[in-house]
Length: 252
Ligand code: PGA
Image 1: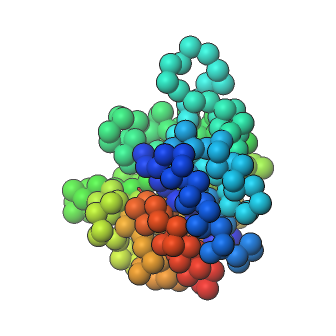
Image 2: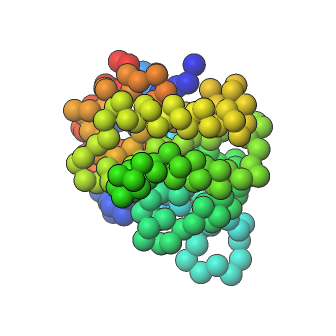
């Protein structure tokens, strides 16, 4: 049985005081164990402060990126060890904004996933097609290639991996994929994982949907057989909105 997971991707939003008041507002609105795992992925600058303020809540922390080296002359980068030090157990990797704006390739994502797993972090690997790719009926090909290259030479023995299917055209646009289309792709991802690894491993991997998730549509996604939660951007920036998404997920 895969535990439902709601991950909040704050992107480049919130100062430390804003993050703290978010947690103060969120904490009384969530139950300690309602069957849903909650992960907040704030900017790097908020991690350590949130580690302390989330300690008693059961809410976990994730980062939005890392660099694969342990330490050294890599100006501006953050290592897996530093993320663990700051309280992270998860890290989002291969988000389409990093792929498109920062030019991250599948090869780079692959190195980052390896480093994350080695350090004991759980990667949330993002995959998804652009609108032109979907219109050309290439969505599955694109996602398959992202999975094949990002997971190349990676053993998951004793490790945990989360995948987020995020169609690029649905991110931040208010236009979500239909739950049927999301289930179709996520079912395809699970079948493909069974080919790369094996069925029992594929059945253990949690696969999230992401792209304009909000309280009005979360229920239809998590009602689907293969969808184990959501990666939520815009709707995770308000504590009451995130709390409602979590509550609706616990009723799945
Ligand atoms: P959104 O972002 O929920 O604002 O569409 C999702 C994401 O980019 O992870």
